Image (cartoon, rainbow over all chains, first blue to last red; front, side):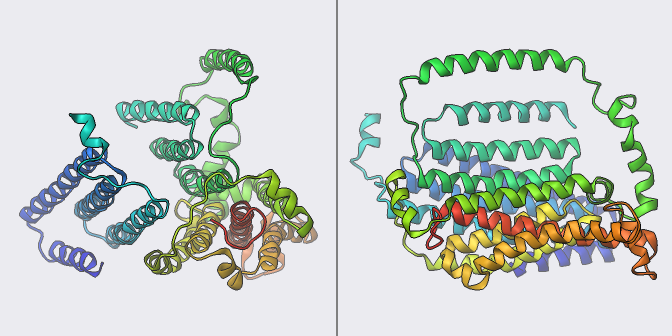
Length: 139
Length: 341
């Protein structure tokens, strides 16, 4: 949580002290890379939710992939916002708001996944085993 | 707005609407309905109505989904088959198709989107857009229209929230005699016996203060950015609902007592109407805030309008917060106010 704030401050300092176009292109490239990586993980998440055999493994895919990919995309957007136009306090404030959303997702999404898992375990949803129906149907 | 994105969103909205009617399992229908609300929120953001989108995200996708879940939890999860069902469905579908046909015909008479000559843009809206900044010094025109120019509408909307939550509260409130009657009438179909999780409690304890801080920011900062009393109040109520889901309702009532809840429900409307009444006493029209400058001569008419808007928003937030929490507690605990979901 503190790590992303420190990194955004670091990037802000870089933008503040150097005005060469190379920094602009590098930061843009970094934000594009982060967003693409996030989209890739989102794809993996949706494939996992569709393809995994039972409730628990599906929740595993949804919880992990969703959290990581939304954090990556939001961080990429924060860098992109920081890089548009001239650096001002308003842009840094928008950046910090996006970082707060990241922190919220970082706490909230795994907790929600845990709550759903716990409810599933409490109501005795059957978990997948090697010899259960999922395998038999495929044969 | 990009039209490809628009068409994709609208298709998804229609699909979600159909699916939520189609599904037999009511819990699934509620979740799909939440997704529908969130897609509508995206559509409104694309059209530039960020305040409406904010309200839809907080009320439609957030709190009302919880209300539906609480209602489904205490009634029935599946639709019961009825002999008369098919004929009534046939009849109502004919009515729906006819109604939809007439609405579709009427679409042709609408002015184009953003048309300068349409009646909407020619009457009072033009005056608000041009003079709001000079008369009230509020950059967000939505707030100045809602809380100043059209304060009468907003006051009665607050009244509607007040009356609705009071009605739900009094209808579901159980005395000892009615408890037995209710037990036979409502059969619990599914009962989740979820173990009390330390992880959920700690995470909620970590999140709730920040949620409330954000809600206060939304209420106070409504003059400058999207937001205001309704949105902030709903977020405040949602933080209380989250606490009562993670612990139980008794724990929250220890801090925020039921009597206090009902009182603040009324006090919010009282603040709104009281400010209007003070304006009337001071010689202006009802809810004409510029009359308040006689009470506080240092403020002047512009500053007094600006400040009165803030107080009105605080009143709205109070009513909406305790209204949401009252509806949730009475729905989720079936009027007993003990455990909840």
